[in-house]
Length: 140
Image 1 (tube, one colour):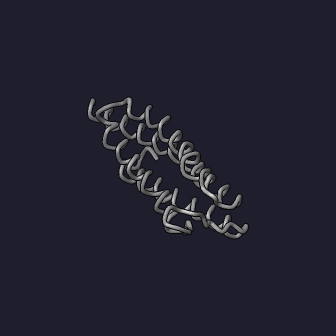
Image 2 (cartoon, rainbow, N blue to C red):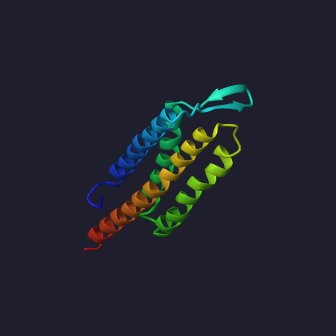
Image 3 (cartoon, one colour):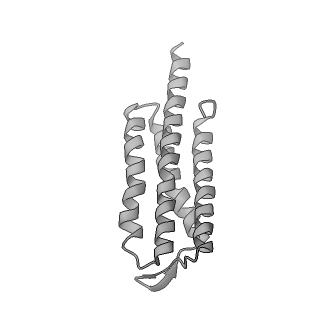
């Protein structure tokens, strides 16, 4: 990924996360997950659009921030390497576990959160390498 632009790295990571999580979601549906839960407004259901959006939007925001800030502050890459995966895991505890989803749905959605961990780690590392390559070219 070092040959790709920062925008391409972000786009590929986001697209990859959406595809992987939609596959995980489809497997969860096939395994019998209903993805229905009780929300404040009544019954609700997690659908494929929700899975795609909850995969794409936080990742897009976070990786875009890293892509923009890393060239100016090298610590951003190190921080994002820790904070990104931690948030992916923490959101399981905050968003998935407290619901009244069935076990299959809960497990599937937790796996969707966990798939973001390696995606974040690889994308942030690639952004860090890309930043160093640009900095090295500017220095010579």
